[in-house]
Image (cartoon, rainbow over all chains, first blue to last red; front, side):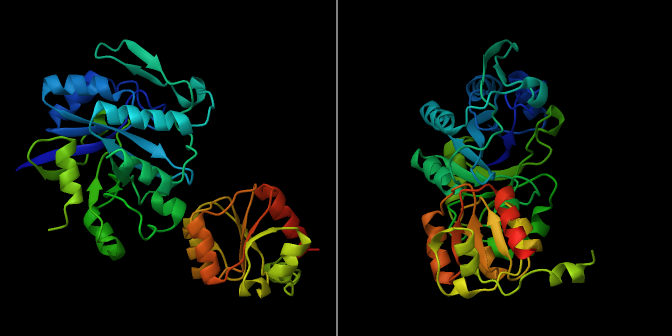
Length: 240
Length: 124
């Protein structure tokens, strides 16, 4: 068992709000500069930039999880993490099936390209990725678990698009594998003010949209090997 | 208009049942709460906002259908919940509405139009 330094919420150029500098090689280099051994690529309602970043990460020694930051019908942002390429494809199909067909206007929202290591465009997501998908938070959690993934509500304490802003409090019985706090919050203070959440694992990630934010906060996990199986084991085994 | 005058103009004697009949609302769950007095309305889809700012006795107008809606309606002692745009409650939302005896109603109107119709009844 080793201590793995992880940042599990990183956007890329594919997210309309992701900075143009958020390309595969830049992200992996920044992760290495910050001594991160594990990162997750979590664009809004899309997984398409994941494979190229994992390929580069494999070569450079940074483990890369596939994932997405899903906007539920309630407009709650929730992270989904998966391990294999097959699971990523299943997640991608689910997102495409439930994302409204609203064309993206790059002048207003930004571009939605995914690119290769040399920053050549591989494709463009046609529909606006920051829309809410037509699935409730409970349906999203159930789907993510049905394909063997991990379900983590994002930046739950933020005043916008968070579990607490949209739903008031964490619904009893929500099957979250962990709750994420943003980089703007002190996790120790948050947990002492919200004792009702003590049964949940709390993680903190950067939600980086700019390169300088990658690794600005991190979470340490005990794992045998940095990767999805290690994360799943770390999150689903009980406290202490 | 001062706050006092404003409140005086509300017809405090209207019950949820009278509102539901007059505005032809769909009744998902009725119960004891149909006798509640309507003390005004609050239109919001942010549950944290309702938790912070809605007042006792108000009718909550929203498109959110999650079960937390009924938990907050109960906590804030709201008189009823109206789902707009033809939205239907989730199953566990309906179960909680029955348990808490808070009327859960529906309208095909969007929030602006329904709020306007209710406002006109409360401030004739």
